Image 1 (cartoon, rainbow, N blue to C red):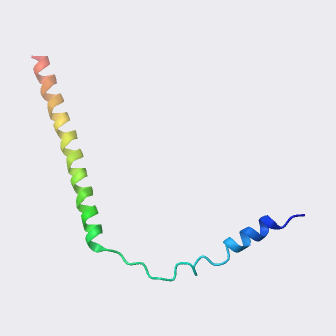
Image 2 (image 1 turned 90 degrees about the horizontal axis):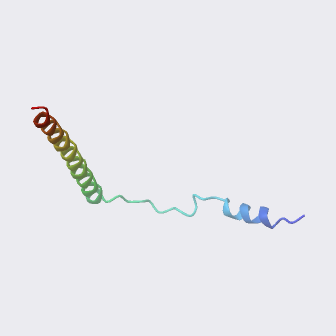
Length: 65
């Protein structure tokens, strides 16, 4: 039997915590900008949906009279 496959997986799965010993830092300004962009996108979506509903109701009202 050939043990190459077993040896390869043994070396890969040894200890993944040793590779990432440096503490990760988070830039708060970048996170704030992402949050602002997401809120802006949500506001645009809400505005589009609301305006579509209002225009549809207006069109239906005009068509019924």
